[in-house]
Every structure is written in structure tokens, then in C-alpha cells.
Image (cartoon, rainbow, N blue to C red; front, side, top):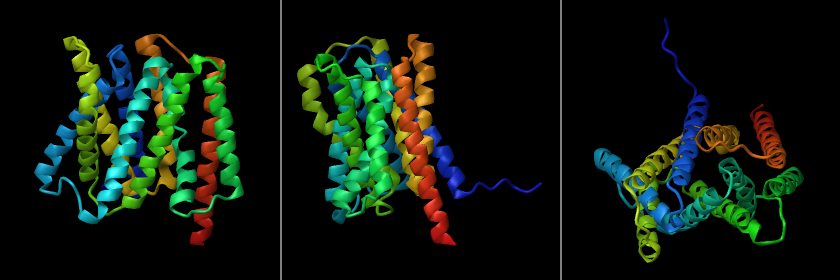
Length: 293
């Protein structure tokens, strides 16, 4: 019997689904940890990832802080990533879990915008239309009422914008740095930056809350390593659609742990955003196939 050999694309798909599950579990443990400040949750989530990445780099005997010429991009990636986590954790606390995660999944559309602004990649008509439709889908989830109730949803969108900026930086880094160096740099940077804010708002935790945050950090590491390795095996345009499995995981976890399901307007929003994401995925795949023939 021949050994089963997986293609790089299949490996990429498996790793991005693993990443989606990791981030869904991270979100669940963040929500389970209760009404703690977002800065406190971010600190414990990132210090756990930092320790895990530190151990891997020691074993691999690689660089902790990367090459000198990549410092600017590494810092920007870490800054935007840190802001994205703080905003996302706040949204997770205040919204239905799958709503918060779906708003965060607007980031690929912001990546298109940032790539046009900073990487000089042109936005064609179909991409522009996809962005507009995705934002219409987001309105079904946000359900704007023009009062303070809208703030958690807007902060969730801000998290997606920051995540997109961080992913744009990752595209620039490409294969310049090892994936574990990137994860350590980000986690270390975030831990140091968040520490003074965390100390200012620190609230006493129970042992269970502390364990939930440690578990959030462990699953966040699975998510981070998964997505970083996934894009090492395959291009984003080949596998990015599978990242939306996070929403399925989040909805199931939300129902099992919290007994909460998204309302019908949110589900419409999910379908709109997923449909336009699927369309863009198929469009890019078709364009690539034509280029290769």
C-alpha cells in the first residue's frame, strides 16, 4: 500500500481549519473567563503564546526577534495585531460569540483595501463590489440602532480592520522570517505593551478564570501557528475560504456552552458575507487556473 501523500494545498486547508478551531475555542474561553478587562485578557492570552513560541525557538535554535531589515514590518504587524485582539476580545464579551467572530472575518475585505493603498495592488470592479456587499452583510449582524448598543459591533469591526492591517504586514514578511519567530515577536511585543494598561485596570481573578485565560492562550497559539503554517503551504487565495469554518465552530460552541444562537438577521449577514467570500475565492481560483494554462 502506497504512503498517503498530501498536497501542499491540502495541508494548507487542514492547517487553516485547525487554526479556525483554535481561534473559536480561544474566543469561547475568553468569554467564559467573565467580565474581566480586555487588557487583562489580552495580556494572559499573549504571555501564554509567548512562552510556547519561546520554547519552540529554543528547540529550533532560531532567532527570537528576526532580521534587522524586517523590524519595521514586524513592529507594525505586532502593533496592529495587539489592537485587533483588544478590540476583538471586547466584542466577544459583549456580543453573541459567532457574531463577534463573523465581524472579525471582514478582515479579508479590508486586506484588499490595504493592499491597494500600501502594496499598490489594483482593486478591480468585482473586488470592489464584493467589499460593498460584505459590508451590507455586516449591517445585518450589527443591526445599527444609532445608540450606544452599536458600540460593541463597531469595535468588532475595528478589530477586523486592525487584523487586516496585521495580515497585510504578514504578506510583506512572506518567507523572510520563520513562523515561530513571527509569533514570538508579536506575542512578546503585545505582552510588553499591554502590561502597564493591564496593571491599571487589573481585577482579581478566581483560579477558574485564570485557567480559562491560560486555555485561551493555548488555543490562540494553535490558531496562530495553524494559520501561519497554512499560508506557508498554500497561498491565501487558495485556502482563505476555509477560515470561515471558524463561524461554524463558534456557533456550535456558543450553543453548547452558553445556550445562545444567532438571530435570523445575523444568519442572513453570515450567509451574505460567506457567499461573497466564496465568490471571491472561486473567482481567484478561476483566474489562477487561466493564468496557468
